[in-house]
Length: 183
Image (cartoon, rainbow, N blue to C red):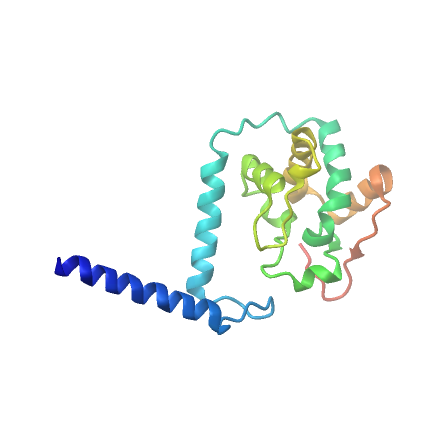
């Protein structure tokens, strides 16, 4: 009986401490205040394990179809480049204020599994600024985006500009200038 009472007291203290922390306003929720290393470790592990757990049964189509890649470019150039940038294209100004920052997909896509890119694109990620495109894009359209994203590590700034000119140059992002992140 003493053990049960001790456990209940400890649980009550933990809950009270949690509520005090939540209602106190001590934690700075501003995007300009970075998380501590424990919080980042927790969030990153939660994100990676959650995505991995949900992508096991996703069947990846053949992503090498040039028409699929071209359609994916059009979607990427219209909906993704503002935050993620592209070879030779910096993210839009507002994206500098995102925390965590949107990853530069032309640098990270080589290491990401297509099923993971599909799942993140379709469902988004809470509290990151990454929207769920599955609410207004079909699975086929999302796979088109994935097909293009997987080509990004091999796309040069000149290639990307050529794609804009030939496939969908209506969207005008910020071209890289001095001090911009180069490949």
